[in-house]
Image (cartoon, rainbow, N blue to C red; front, side, top):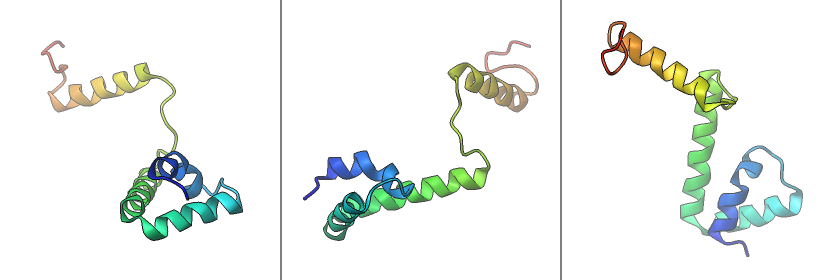
Length: 87
């Protein structure tokens, strides 16, 4: 029988259809008796769907790119200056 930690580490594989038949069945068996893991899988599924709907299914390749994007958003929100009042 799988433990909750096993389910957590294999959840993405389950949702992406990357697990073999035996692994999938073992996960589903655990999910049949564990309400907490069912909630976890359901939340991961909702999160995956929201990411797909946002049109941005890939993760950023660098944190610098995300920082630049956040700076731009903050600049727009602050009327052209950044969060510290710099132009």
